[in-house]
Image (cartoon, rainbow, N blue to C red):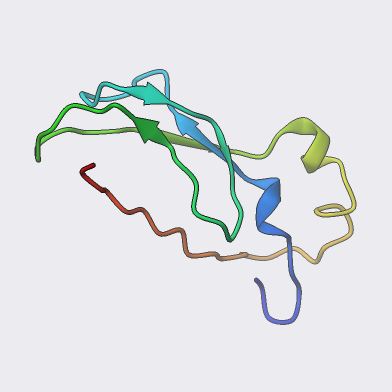
Length: 86
């Protein structure tokens, strides 16, 4: 959101970076949305584990009307992460 201008959240993809940190488990690439999604499964237990994330806009989205034609400026969105032990 930038004032009254909107870019849909599904233009953004989140995934574990090449320098993925100390957290193990199975990491998934997630297209941002309002729905709950799983980013990491089968991670080991521990409070000192790290996970580095890359936020990208794929080429197909960056050249789409979702982004092109929008006014220049800073667009913001809140992303909430929840760690759950199963």
